[in-house]
Length: 208
Image (cartoon, helix red, strand yellow):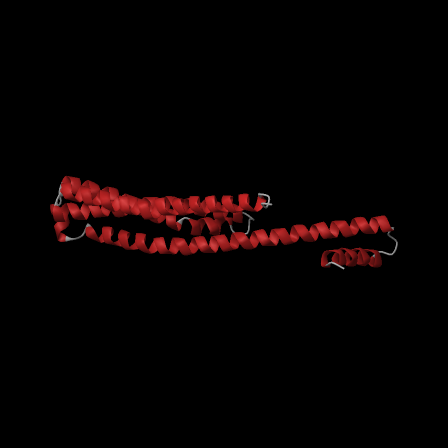
């Protein structure tokens, strides 16, 4: 006897044995309700485990980015108190302010999932937590990329001049976009196309 049929029969027998006054039809209905409740419970447990795993993976990614943004923010905060900072040009001062603000925004976005989790904890909003934390992390990474490029432009302007610094900063921005955006999107599209080909090959009739 298949395991599913045996489980259904055991559920029916249990329902009938525990309530001898029930008719056979009522016992069958009770067994069906119990089986449906068990199926829904297992599906909810699987969904909960998936969300927990997704949030844990997201936190690991955020920790990697947080290290970079913390180092950059500490560097920029101490830079204003160095002796040479008073001799920078107005353009360099503007770049510094923009860079400092970008880094602060990146830090706030990458740290935001922690207070968000704390404020919604225990309210059965794990799906919203995962979705919101993912968007915050994405925007935090984009802001961090701009902050790093702005830092490169500021430092290279002091070292090699504005024109060459602009060129090198553009190269750095292209490098970041290629590895942070283009490569993942290309991998996703390639995987989607491969799955579509596999599904089409599985549905196609076998050649005679």
